[in-house]
Image (cartoon, rainbow, N blue to C red; front, top):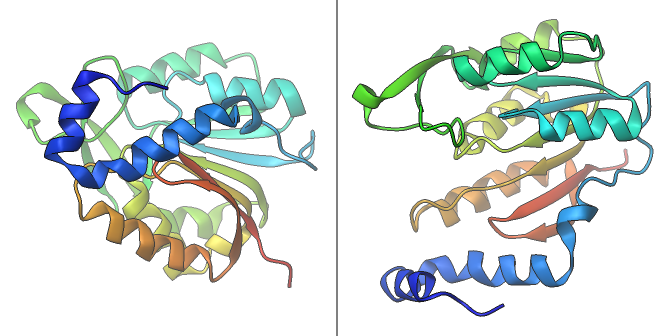
Length: 219
């Protein structure tokens, strides 16, 4: 894959981004986009978390493939309402119109129709709800969640440590996460979160800042 002038200039300015560009090229070479939907052992009795549901395409695909129950978390009011409408006739796809994080609160989200990413420009943003993940997990049944996909535009640096701190990370059989690299310091943040993951899970495959997958370690 040839690098565009825009990306070349960005790398000149921010050489720390090379980790992502190299990983993305390898991801494309390995044809991983199709492979990341393949999960051995997933079936109709499985429970799945889709954290960062956006338009619901991933949730729809996983349910169509495996028949699993999928809990979709999407705090953006517009996207959440569309998800409720899309899946209103499917009792096995359950929409939660809030985000999960270390603490309860509110999240300012982009309203550009692209993705529910957090923004600093409050004047041009919408507000979404955040619920404390420890409290949510304390009430959630069943105790084992077979798969969790996380794509929340940087929120992974808050959510995953909170799950580790509460002891709930070990409840997830597979964790598939996209870490985001907005600044150079995100490399150290990712390393810290990966250290948390390594306490309960084993890395299955990894393309830094593209996607990576962890499987719960055998007791």
